Image (cartoon, rainbow, N blue to C red; front, side):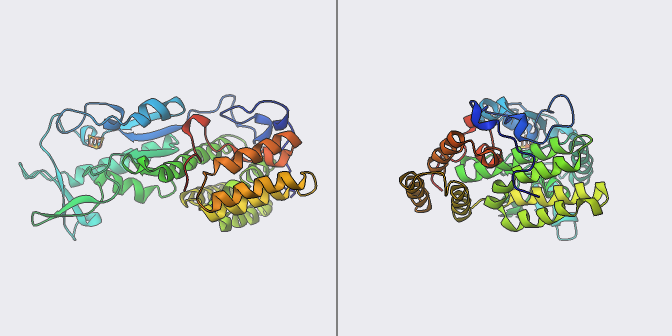
Length: 351
Ligand code: SF4
Protein backbone atom coordinates (compact mmCIF):
# COMPACT_ATOMS: atom_id res chain seq x y z
CA UNK A 1 0.00 0.00 0.00
CA UNK A 2 1.40 3.42 -0.84
CA UNK A 3 0.83 6.31 1.51
CA UNK A 4 -0.96 8.30 -1.15
CA UNK A 5 -3.49 5.60 -2.03
CA UNK A 6 -7.03 6.85 -1.90
CA UNK A 7 -6.00 10.50 -1.52
CA UNK A 8 -6.58 12.83 -4.41
CA UNK A 9 -5.08 16.14 -5.26
CA UNK A 10 -7.94 18.57 -4.76
CA UNK A 11 -7.03 20.00 -1.40
CA UNK A 12 -4.44 22.48 -2.63
CA UNK A 13 -6.67 23.93 -5.33
CA UNK A 14 -9.21 25.79 -3.24
CA UNK A 15 -9.97 27.09 0.22
CA UNK A 16 -10.26 24.45 2.93
CA UNK A 17 -13.69 23.82 4.33
CA UNK A 18 -14.04 23.79 8.06
CA UNK A 19 -15.89 20.51 8.53
CA UNK A 20 -16.17 18.01 7.09
CA UNK A 21 -13.03 18.00 4.98
CA UNK A 22 -13.36 17.70 1.18
CA UNK A 23 -14.93 14.40 0.20
CA UNK A 24 -12.24 13.64 -2.32
CA UNK A 25 -9.73 13.38 0.54
CA UNK A 26 -11.81 11.09 2.68
CA UNK A 27 -13.25 7.62 2.40
CA UNK A 28 -16.69 7.99 0.90
CA UNK A 29 -19.50 7.94 3.49
CA UNK A 30 -21.79 4.94 3.34
CA UNK A 31 -25.03 6.94 3.18
CA UNK A 32 -26.16 10.01 1.28
CA UNK A 33 -25.86 12.36 4.28
CA UNK A 34 -23.39 12.12 7.18
CA UNK A 35 -25.16 11.27 10.40
CA UNK A 36 -25.11 13.91 13.12
CA UNK A 37 -22.29 13.54 15.60
CA UNK A 38 -24.12 12.48 18.75
CA UNK A 39 -22.62 13.21 22.15
CA UNK A 40 -24.18 12.04 25.39
CA UNK A 41 -24.30 14.60 28.18
CA UNK A 42 -25.50 14.95 31.75
CA UNK A 43 -28.74 16.82 31.15
CA UNK A 44 -28.12 19.49 33.81
CA UNK A 45 -25.06 20.67 31.81
CA UNK A 46 -27.39 21.66 28.98
CA UNK A 47 -29.35 23.94 31.30
CA UNK A 48 -32.16 21.51 32.07
CA UNK A 49 -33.64 21.93 35.52
CA UNK A 50 -33.11 18.37 36.67
CA UNK A 51 -30.82 18.78 39.67
CA UNK A 52 -31.80 17.81 43.23
CA UNK A 53 -32.45 21.50 44.01
CA UNK A 54 -34.53 22.06 40.87
CA UNK A 55 -31.75 23.96 39.15
CA UNK A 56 -29.19 23.29 36.45
CA UNK A 57 -25.47 23.65 35.80
CA UNK A 58 -25.37 24.89 32.24
CA UNK A 59 -21.89 24.62 30.77
CA UNK A 60 -21.70 27.23 28.07
CA UNK A 61 -18.86 25.66 26.18
CA UNK A 62 -21.31 22.86 25.40
CA UNK A 63 -24.41 24.96 24.76
CA UNK A 64 -22.73 27.83 22.91
CA UNK A 65 -19.73 26.23 21.16
CA UNK A 66 -19.87 22.48 20.81
CA UNK A 67 -23.61 22.52 20.09
CA UNK A 68 -22.83 24.02 16.66
CA UNK A 69 -21.25 20.73 15.58
CA UNK A 70 -22.85 17.92 17.54
CA UNK A 71 -26.28 16.70 18.51
CA UNK A 72 -26.47 16.25 22.25
CA UNK A 73 -28.25 13.27 23.78
CA UNK A 74 -29.19 14.45 27.28
CA UNK A 75 -29.39 11.91 30.07
CA UNK A 76 -30.33 12.56 33.69
CA UNK A 77 -29.97 9.18 35.38
CA UNK A 78 -31.68 10.31 38.60
CA UNK A 79 -34.76 11.69 36.87
CA UNK A 80 -34.90 8.85 34.36
CA UNK A 81 -34.77 6.30 37.15
CA UNK A 82 -37.84 7.93 38.64
CA UNK A 83 -36.61 10.44 41.23
CA UNK A 84 -38.56 13.70 41.52
CA UNK A 85 -37.19 17.23 41.03
CA UNK A 86 -36.49 18.73 43.50
CA UNK A 87 -35.47 15.70 45.61
CA UNK A 88 -33.51 14.83 48.73
CA UNK A 89 -29.77 14.52 48.15
CA UNK A 90 -28.27 11.11 47.59
CA UNK A 91 -24.73 9.89 48.20
CA UNK A 92 -22.35 7.04 47.50
CA UNK A 93 -21.61 4.78 50.46
CA UNK A 94 -18.77 2.26 50.56
CA UNK A 95 -19.89 -1.36 50.53
CA UNK A 96 -17.24 -3.86 49.53
CA UNK A 97 -19.89 -6.54 49.03
CA UNK A 98 -21.88 -4.47 46.50
CA UNK A 99 -21.16 -4.45 42.74
CA UNK A 100 -18.55 -1.76 42.13
CA UNK A 101 -17.87 -1.51 45.90
CA UNK A 102 -20.44 1.25 46.50
CA UNK A 103 -24.13 1.87 47.07
CA UNK A 104 -26.29 4.84 46.13
CA UNK A 105 -28.43 5.84 49.09
CA UNK A 106 -30.58 8.72 50.32
CA UNK A 107 -29.34 9.56 53.83
CA UNK A 108 -32.53 11.41 54.86
CA UNK A 109 -34.90 8.53 53.99
CA UNK A 110 -32.57 5.53 54.05
CA UNK A 111 -33.76 4.53 50.58
CA UNK A 112 -31.25 2.50 48.57
CA UNK A 113 -31.27 3.30 44.84
CA UNK A 114 -28.32 1.09 43.90
CA UNK A 115 -30.09 -1.74 42.14
CA UNK A 116 -32.52 0.48 40.28
CA UNK A 117 -29.72 2.79 39.14
CA UNK A 118 -27.47 -0.05 38.05
CA UNK A 119 -30.27 -1.74 36.07
CA UNK A 120 -31.21 1.59 34.50
CA UNK A 121 -27.59 2.35 33.62
CA UNK A 122 -27.04 -1.00 31.92
CA UNK A 123 -30.15 -0.60 29.79
CA UNK A 124 -29.50 3.07 28.98
CA UNK A 125 -25.88 2.49 27.99
CA UNK A 126 -26.99 -0.29 25.63
CA UNK A 127 -29.53 2.12 24.13
CA UNK A 128 -26.88 4.84 23.74
CA UNK A 129 -24.63 2.37 21.94
CA UNK A 130 -27.45 1.77 19.47
CA UNK A 131 -27.59 5.51 18.87
CA UNK A 132 -23.89 5.51 17.93
CA UNK A 133 -22.61 8.12 20.36
CA UNK A 134 -19.21 9.62 19.58
CA UNK A 135 -18.50 10.94 23.08
CA UNK A 136 -19.96 11.75 26.47
CA UNK A 137 -19.65 14.70 28.85
CA UNK A 138 -20.42 13.93 32.49
CA UNK A 139 -21.18 16.26 35.39
CA UNK A 140 -18.33 16.24 37.89
CA UNK A 141 -18.79 15.22 41.55
CA UNK A 142 -22.28 13.78 41.11
CA UNK A 143 -22.98 10.44 42.86
CA UNK A 144 -24.66 9.36 39.63
CA UNK A 145 -22.69 11.10 36.86
CA UNK A 146 -19.25 11.92 38.33
CA UNK A 147 -16.40 10.21 36.49
CA UNK A 148 -13.86 10.28 39.30
CA UNK A 149 -13.14 11.71 42.76
CA UNK A 150 -16.79 11.63 43.83
CA UNK A 151 -17.40 11.70 47.59
CA UNK A 152 -17.65 8.13 48.85
CA UNK A 153 -18.89 7.87 52.43
CA UNK A 154 -17.52 5.35 54.88
CA UNK A 155 -19.16 5.77 58.30
CA UNK A 156 -20.01 9.40 57.52
CA UNK A 157 -16.43 10.23 56.52
CA UNK A 158 -16.17 11.00 52.80
CA UNK A 159 -13.13 10.29 50.68
CA UNK A 160 -12.78 11.49 47.09
CA UNK A 161 -12.52 7.98 45.69
CA UNK A 162 -16.01 7.25 44.34
CA UNK A 163 -17.33 7.03 40.79
CA UNK A 164 -20.90 8.03 40.02
CA UNK A 165 -23.01 4.92 39.63
CA UNK A 166 -24.23 5.66 36.11
CA UNK A 167 -20.72 6.74 35.06
CA UNK A 168 -19.25 3.56 36.51
CA UNK A 169 -21.43 1.42 34.24
CA UNK A 170 -20.81 3.68 31.21
CA UNK A 171 -17.03 3.52 31.63
CA UNK A 172 -16.98 -0.24 32.25
CA UNK A 173 -19.32 -1.16 29.40
CA UNK A 174 -17.89 1.19 26.80
CA UNK A 175 -14.16 1.72 27.36
CA UNK A 176 -13.50 3.04 23.84
CA UNK A 177 -16.01 5.88 24.12
CA UNK A 178 -14.39 9.33 24.62
CA UNK A 179 -15.68 10.46 28.03
CA UNK A 180 -14.85 13.60 29.99
CA UNK A 181 -16.19 15.63 32.87
CA UNK A 182 -17.18 19.23 32.38
CA UNK A 183 -14.70 20.38 35.05
CA UNK A 184 -11.78 18.74 33.26
CA UNK A 185 -12.83 20.31 29.96
CA UNK A 186 -11.74 23.68 31.33
CA UNK A 187 -8.19 22.38 30.86
CA UNK A 188 -7.30 23.16 27.21
CA UNK A 189 -5.12 20.07 26.83
CA UNK A 190 -7.81 17.70 28.16
CA UNK A 191 -10.43 19.48 26.08
CA UNK A 192 -8.35 19.07 22.94
CA UNK A 193 -7.74 15.38 23.62
CA UNK A 194 -11.45 14.82 24.16
CA UNK A 195 -12.55 16.73 21.08
CA UNK A 196 -10.01 15.04 18.84
CA UNK A 197 -11.29 11.68 20.03
CA UNK A 198 -14.94 12.67 19.46
CA UNK A 199 -14.32 13.76 15.87
CA UNK A 200 -12.10 10.74 15.17
CA UNK A 201 -14.90 8.50 16.45
CA UNK A 202 -17.31 10.26 14.10
CA UNK A 203 -15.01 9.68 11.12
CA UNK A 204 -14.70 6.00 11.97
CA UNK A 205 -18.44 5.64 12.35
CA UNK A 206 -18.98 7.22 8.92
CA UNK A 207 -16.50 4.79 7.36
CA UNK A 208 -18.28 1.73 8.70
CA UNK A 209 -21.86 3.01 8.46
CA UNK A 210 -22.72 1.13 5.29
CA UNK A 211 -21.24 -1.18 2.70
CA UNK A 212 -17.60 -0.14 3.03
CA UNK A 213 -15.05 -1.59 0.66
CA UNK A 214 -11.46 -2.67 1.13
CA UNK A 215 -10.21 0.48 -0.58
CA UNK A 216 -12.25 2.64 1.82
CA UNK A 217 -10.44 1.19 4.82
CA UNK A 218 -7.08 1.67 3.08
CA UNK A 219 -7.92 5.31 2.31
CA UNK A 220 -9.18 5.89 5.85
CA UNK A 221 -6.07 4.43 7.44
CA UNK A 222 -3.85 6.44 5.09
CA UNK A 223 -5.62 9.70 5.99
CA UNK A 224 -5.37 8.98 9.72
CA UNK A 225 -1.66 8.21 9.71
CA UNK A 226 -0.33 11.44 11.21
CA UNK A 227 -3.16 11.71 13.75
CA UNK A 228 -2.46 8.17 14.94
CA UNK A 229 1.28 8.83 15.09
CA UNK A 230 0.66 11.85 17.32
CA UNK A 231 -1.38 9.76 19.74
CA UNK A 232 -0.14 6.21 19.62
CA UNK A 233 2.51 5.20 17.05
CA UNK A 234 2.24 1.53 18.03
CA UNK A 235 -1.47 1.62 17.24
CA UNK A 236 -0.68 3.00 13.79
CA UNK A 237 1.66 0.09 13.10
CA UNK A 238 -0.74 -2.52 14.51
CA UNK A 239 -3.62 -1.13 12.49
CA UNK A 240 -1.45 -1.02 9.37
CA UNK A 241 -0.72 -4.74 9.75
CA UNK A 242 -4.43 -5.36 10.19
CA UNK A 243 -5.30 -3.40 7.04
CA UNK A 244 -2.64 -5.29 5.08
CA UNK A 245 -4.23 -8.63 6.16
CA UNK A 246 -7.79 -7.54 5.61
CA UNK A 247 -8.49 -10.10 2.86
CA UNK A 248 -7.74 -12.93 5.34
CA UNK A 249 -10.15 -11.81 8.05
CA UNK A 250 -13.92 -12.07 8.35
CA UNK A 251 -15.37 -8.65 7.67
CA UNK A 252 -17.09 -8.25 11.04
CA UNK A 253 -13.97 -9.25 12.91
CA UNK A 254 -11.85 -6.83 10.88
CA UNK A 255 -14.26 -3.97 11.52
CA UNK A 256 -14.52 -4.68 15.25
CA UNK A 257 -10.78 -5.13 15.74
CA UNK A 258 -9.84 -2.07 13.70
CA UNK A 259 -12.47 0.07 15.45
CA UNK A 260 -11.48 -0.91 18.98
CA UNK A 261 -7.77 -0.31 18.45
CA UNK A 262 -8.33 2.92 16.53
CA UNK A 263 -10.57 4.37 19.24
CA UNK A 264 -8.28 3.34 22.07
CA UNK A 265 -5.41 5.08 20.26
CA UNK A 266 -7.25 8.39 20.50
CA UNK A 267 -7.76 7.89 24.23
CA UNK A 268 -3.97 8.34 24.50
CA UNK A 269 -3.22 12.04 24.72
CA UNK A 270 -0.94 13.30 21.97
CA UNK A 271 2.37 14.43 23.47
CA UNK A 272 4.56 17.35 22.52
CA UNK A 273 7.37 14.97 21.52
CA UNK A 274 5.12 12.96 19.23
CA UNK A 275 3.79 16.14 17.63
CA UNK A 276 7.40 17.19 16.96
CA UNK A 277 8.03 13.84 15.25
CA UNK A 278 4.93 14.33 13.10
CA UNK A 279 5.93 17.87 12.13
CA UNK A 280 9.41 16.67 11.15
CA UNK A 281 7.86 13.82 9.19
CA UNK A 282 5.74 16.36 7.31
CA UNK A 283 8.71 18.55 6.63
CA UNK A 284 10.43 15.54 5.04
CA UNK A 285 7.96 15.81 2.16
CA UNK A 286 9.50 19.17 1.25
CA UNK A 287 13.10 18.00 1.30
CA UNK A 288 13.64 18.57 -2.43
CA UNK A 289 11.06 21.24 -3.10
CA UNK A 290 11.33 23.87 -0.39
CA UNK A 291 14.30 26.28 -0.38
CA UNK A 292 16.60 25.81 2.58
CA UNK A 293 15.70 29.15 4.22
CA UNK A 294 12.00 28.28 4.16
CA UNK A 295 12.66 24.83 5.60
CA UNK A 296 14.69 26.43 8.38
CA UNK A 297 11.86 28.83 9.05
CA UNK A 298 9.59 25.85 9.72
CA UNK A 299 12.26 24.05 11.73
CA UNK A 300 12.73 27.09 13.97
CA UNK A 301 9.00 27.12 14.72
CA UNK A 302 9.05 23.39 15.40
CA UNK A 303 11.86 24.00 17.90
CA UNK A 304 9.87 26.83 19.48
CA UNK A 305 6.98 24.42 19.86
CA UNK A 306 9.25 21.75 21.31
CA UNK A 307 10.52 24.32 23.84
CA UNK A 308 6.96 25.21 24.88
CA UNK A 309 7.19 28.75 23.50
CA UNK A 310 4.42 28.58 20.91
CA UNK A 311 1.32 26.41 20.41
CA UNK A 312 1.19 23.66 17.81
CA UNK A 313 -0.94 25.87 15.57
CA UNK A 314 2.10 28.07 14.82
CA UNK A 315 4.37 25.57 12.99
CA UNK A 316 1.32 23.75 11.68
CA UNK A 317 -0.09 26.85 10.02
CA UNK A 318 3.14 27.45 8.16
CA UNK A 319 3.35 23.81 7.12
CA UNK A 320 -0.25 23.89 5.97
CA UNK A 321 0.57 26.89 3.81
CA UNK A 322 3.41 24.98 2.12
CA UNK A 323 1.19 21.91 1.70
CA UNK A 324 -1.32 24.01 -0.20
CA UNK A 325 1.20 26.08 -2.13
CA UNK A 326 2.99 22.97 -3.38
CA UNK A 327 -0.08 20.76 -3.69
CA UNK A 328 1.25 17.90 -1.56
CA UNK A 329 -1.82 15.71 -1.92
CA UNK A 330 -0.85 13.07 0.62
CA UNK A 331 -0.38 15.63 3.39
CA UNK A 332 -3.43 17.63 2.34
CA UNK A 333 -5.56 14.55 2.95
CA UNK A 334 -4.32 14.02 6.50
CA UNK A 335 -6.91 14.48 9.24
CA UNK A 336 -4.04 15.76 11.38
CA UNK A 337 -4.31 19.10 9.59
CA UNK A 338 -8.01 19.50 10.42
CA UNK A 339 -8.95 17.27 13.34
CA UNK A 340 -12.04 19.28 14.30
CA UNK A 341 -13.89 22.49 13.33
CA UNK A 342 -11.70 25.60 13.47
CA UNK A 343 -13.97 27.45 15.87
CA UNK A 344 -13.22 24.90 18.57
CA UNK A 345 -9.66 26.30 18.52
CA UNK A 346 -7.71 23.10 18.95
CA UNK A 347 -3.92 23.40 19.04
CA UNK A 348 -3.99 27.03 20.01
CA UNK A 349 -2.55 26.76 23.52
CA UNK A 350 1.00 26.00 24.57
CA UNK A 351 1.21 22.45 25.93
S1 SF4 B 1 -25.45 15.33 37.60
FE1 SF4 B 1 -26.47 13.71 36.46
S2 SF4 B 1 -28.03 12.91 37.83
FE2 SF4 B 1 -27.38 14.88 38.66
S3 SF4 B 1 -28.82 16.36 37.80
FE3 SF4 B 1 -27.08 16.29 36.44
S4 SF4 B 1 -27.69 14.79 34.90
FE4 SF4 B 1 -29.03 14.48 36.62
